[in-house]
Image (cartoon, rainbow, N blue to C red; front, side, top):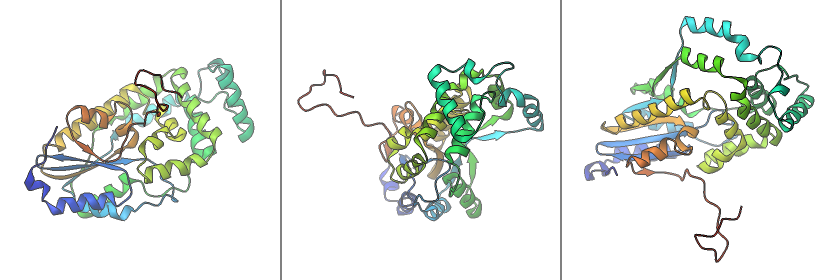
Amino acid sequence: MTSVSPAWAQDDGANEIIVTAQRSGAPMWTIDTPGGAIVLVGEIRAVPKATPWFPDRLEEATAGADRVILGLKPKVSPGDVFRILFAGGRITRLPKDTTAADYLDPVQAQRLAALEAKYDQDYARSSFLITAFDLLARRLGFSRDTGKDASDVVEKAARRAKVPAEPVGTIRGEDMLDSLAEAPPQAHIACLDAAMTATETGPELIARRGAGWRASDVPAVMANPLEQALGQCWPWADQSVGGELRGQWLAAIDRAAQESGVTLAVAPLRVLAEDQGVLDQLEAKGFEIRGPDWRPVPPARPSGATADDPIEK
């Protein structure tokens, strides 16, 4: 387990950066290193404007940091633009002569039909990913009336304060588009199913997700059907893209642990807090992580039950 030197523990400037960042209201974790500290901010995109957090305090903390790590940066070439144009039909529509009913089970097909009737839409030929995005963004409206996202706040603050900032890594646009274009319709059914669940539940999910994030109730955010739907959809659910992203975050934090001073990093909350995600893997590597609980709380056992008794659900 990583230890912190007495000299660093007495560094009031570093402690002030950490406390200021924590006062922003965004959930975060700190890791002491031999020569400094790492502050990991867990981000959700599309934070509702009604969520009362304080971006200015995160800006202030960023200005005092020694370096900043931001999210993955796709590398898109002119050729990738043409690939989108030529692959458009494969990405947006189901294969020729097939409809949603050819892939969904009867219950899923019935739920989709009910949503089509409710919103006066025809999803029969749309790819399941496009249908899921339409349900979440336009029907549920999770991307409406949003405020500042943590990564945007930190990126702009670092630029103004001339704090060195870099993406955690890059991924070729070609790889992302290939994985999307080549995926069969069945690969996106879990995404559609989760998006239907979130849309059926209703817009209250949006406020609950924001409130859980602001309260650092990470298990509640991760269990929110909206967050689960976003995590079930491309690119997060794509094993090649998602796996590469997680590996890049672990490598970046390993490198930051060798640096002196304070590193402030903004990572997607689901990448940090998912089962066997970045926080679990950092802990397994021996890092001492301070911050809110990120694992789901197991159900309580009935009074008088023993460890061998089954847990009631």
